[in-house]
Image 1: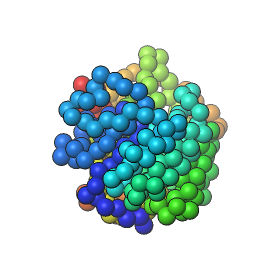
Image 2: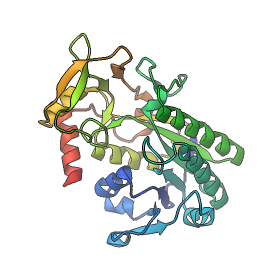
Image 3: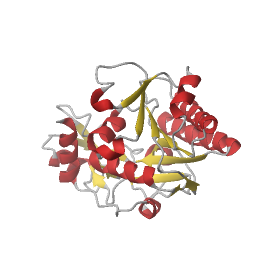
Image 4: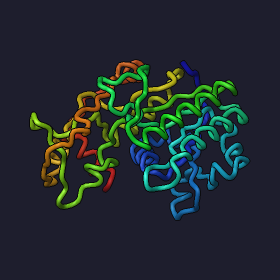
Length: 286
């Protein structure tokens, strides 16, 4: 279990991304005052509300990264690449860069953002200590990121925790990617794909709580209890969709075991509710 001095600031890499925006939207102001926020390019809102923005590219400016990390208790790495946007190998490179900066600057811990995609077709509930069998290039890249970050952290004496985040309602390809004519797979029992979801506000709260934790394990599933059918989510959002027979290789259920997460939080993990997930997304978009 990793330890952390929670009284020092936190450096967030990729703070202008969607999860970073959710943190800044939903986190208490007193918590946000202790953040240093990184982005790669200037923007009109860089000084909004007195936020401490640092503008640099972590992979090409290690000195700026080290300077930004100096005095921080830990680094939260939200920066990364997804399919179709950037080189997926940058995920591992960013993990290594964050760990090396933490070691040089005396940070106690690095938190990496991974994904439930690392489990692939494994049957659930999916536990952090089971073998990882990613089923696509993104999942494979996240596994390499976790391994690269952990190996470098072990060598440098830095604690690291990888958050394996489930589907984030609104940041996913279903609610967030909906367009007219949207179609979902339907399995022989009449269900649509079922996934462990988390709302954007709930995700922000969980991350805030975890960054306050004095100890974290090497990997941690992040979601809400009770997996949600994708069809239920779209229905609650009043978004029309069609169904088609699911192909033989479709994954019907990805359920994360949240026992370890619950042991790390001050407040209980609550069950996911389609209405609440949609409301949180709408609240973020307003």
